[in-house]
Length: 274
Image: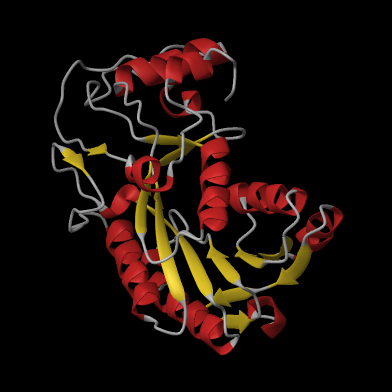
C-alpha cells in the first residue's frame, strides 16, 4: 500500500488512527502543535511535523501537504471561543492543501451541525445548527467542499466514547438531570478508526457521511450503565423528553458495506471497553 496519508491533528483520535494506518502499511505523516509530542509520533513510525494554523502564528512544513490524502481532525477547541476563527483556520489549511497538490481531503466534522429537531436526521438533511460551534463547523465543511483542486469527503462523528473518555464522569452523582429519555448519539473510538480506514480503502470521496452507532439508548440508561461499570455513583435523570435528535448513521452501512463494531452498547460496555 503506497498511499501517502497526512493526518492534521494527532490528538485522541488522530494519533490512534495514525498508528493503525502505519500498521497497515500506509506512509503516514502526523502533525502536532507541541514539540514534546514529536518524538512520540516518531516512535510509532509516524513522520512528525510541527504545524500550527492559529491566527497569530501560522507555520507548517510544505512537505506535509504533498500527500495523496489529507485527513483534517482539528475540531474547534472547547471553551476557547475558537468558533469565531475556526472557519478562517480551515480556509488556510485548504489553501495549503491546494498548494501542496493534495488529491483528496477527509474532513472530520461533527453531528453538532444538526439542531435538536425532535426527530431522526440523515445526511439528506439541510443542517441548521443552533449552537455557535455547530455554525462554525458547518461553515468549515462548506469551505472544504468549495475547493475544486481536491476531492473531499465530510465525516460527521457523533459523541465520542472510548479510552480516556469515560462518560460516567459527566453526570456521576448528579440529581434531577433534564431530558433523561432523549436518545444518545455516540461513536466508539474503535469505530472512528475502522470507519476512516474503510473510507480510505473504498476510495469513498465526494460524499458526506454521518458516523454514529445504530444503537440509541436513552441518556438515563446509558449514563447509569457506564456509572455502574466504572464503580461511580449513579446519576439521577428526570424521565422526560424535551429537545433531542436521533442521528442516522446507516449510509456508511448501505453505501460502503461498513459494519459498526458497536451495534449494542449494553453488550459492548459489558466487556469493560470504556
